[in-house]
Length: 507
Image 1 (tube, rainbow, N blue to C red):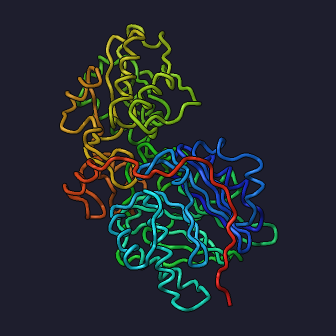
Image 2 (cartoon, rainbow, N blue to C red; image 1 turned 180 degrees about the vertical axis):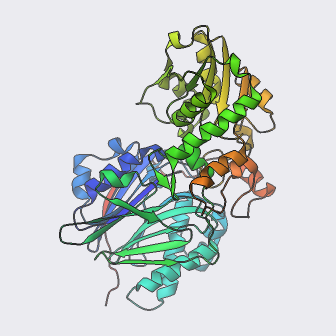
């Protein structure tokens, strides 16, 4: 669940890309990278860590050019903590291409075997993003053949061929040295990708592509639209805009978990206000609470900050109960769900949240969270609230039970990690030491989001119902995934910074 950003402008883009990555930091805290284009030269800097730690003044000075792409990494495949797998990735042929990818492929082994056998390409990391880059490069080489100049139609033909081979979820931004910026989205639209623009005083239009629309206002850009499932856009370094549908049967099936947790509430994604969706989740969850618990036993409704606040506020209103903020968040601790490793997540819960004892003493509390995934955070919070003096602790989740692995870019790949796997709500309550647990119904959650944009045909709700949008996931696949150790790459850590001279065979 990474964040990608790309832009073609008529001014230096290094500071804009950095500022945009800061806004997208919630989508990945493992690594960050920026590549800028200056004529035939590509300038790159990337490393592990938060955006503010990866880039220094000297790094920014070297990132010259009026176009660039950027990435924040949330590791789901490959070796977390290695700068070798920080993005963007680079290949020098044809022309020189850098690529940043949000999502996860479901057939990387098959693709890599074909690349090695047919195109004699070498994949040097465990990242499926490097595989995706090499598929794109191979298809571009195949399309242009012996020609030395790249046409816009060639780019779209290459993406169309890629879409026929690649399965999984992907929102992609890429630079082709000497030509322009490419962005494309998987045919199911699982991962988000939005287009923005800005017009200067001379009437020239600059373009930006991002994982979320929240990047645009602070940088002086306006949201144009979502990039459609299967669509590719190409913006030349001269500012010319081109787009084409590159999938044979595209369908809009966005990831439902984006609306529950990952996206910032001030984003508009697939035509849906994330904030409004979360407010409406609170209304339907309140109805479920009424059916499942005795409302007169609840003294106060309290969110687990930050994502659940809109849902908790509406839930409290519809139950007619007081809304209180009793858990104070340390904003300098990262999002625990996307931290690598169970021990790290558990330790971070106590560092991240601190209770106000007076808000809990002698009261029956209904805690509201966006979801319960592994249960580690929930259990720690319930114990913390009881220690603060709560008489009873109930727990409400704005999302349904997470019972199945996610294979499209969310780090919950094995059933053994999921607290809801094989357990009822009563058993889950016992596991997290709560007096009761209430989960949102899946139909209600899907209807809430679809009501805000009826054009959405369906959702990737696979972590809730086990139905995978790409149609290629079976029990054998899930078993292989659970048996495979995480992080097969042995690349050494350490920052990467270099400029790449590209001889793009031009007439």
